[in-house]
Length: 257
Image 1 (cartoon, rainbow, N blue to C red):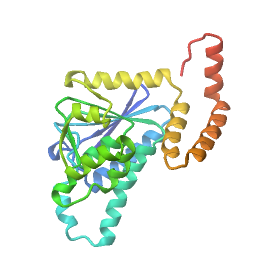
Image 2 (cartoon, rainbow, N blue to C red):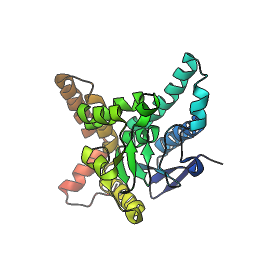
Image 3 (cartoon, rainbow, N blue to C red):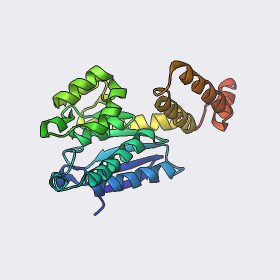
């Protein structure tokens, strides 16, 4: 049985965590399947947007408990390799050339909350809870901290990471962690509508370049960031999408992406 289901419809790739009996807990196998699925979506020219969702009551409960027991006997080298495996997944999602939307129908905890954190947009039901609970079991939320601080700022991230507190979806929205809170009966339709708006209204190439710029400028001084922005601006103007878009705009024509 596949731990991650993959399908494409209306230029959207749907990646579905499919381990509901384990609350979609993360194991080395499911991480591998997720990495492969995101690679597949990125390389598929027919796909413009990726939706990450889950089967069952939970979105993702974090690390698999059986695997956590095995970790106690790992050497430093084995633990480092395991951490690198998850790091590669988070980085792949965060830097994917296509927009990634998380559709959270249940609790997203620890590493599962990390998955939602690294997506570009996150839509969640009111009943969903979010939290980085690692400190409560003597672990640390090391990888996700890098992304969370970028996303919501140091002070808010300090509170969530150091307390391990579980927060409701409305609080997660107010904190800037998620994009929108949506009733369960409307979640799938709202995510699909949002994805279709991106697909129909925006250039895929422009979204890719903009996402890349957002990721890169945060590591630079203001001067270097502006230099990079000017360079990317100039490159974007030479793209086929930009020429097509400007031509349609000037001629008052509808742009079909």
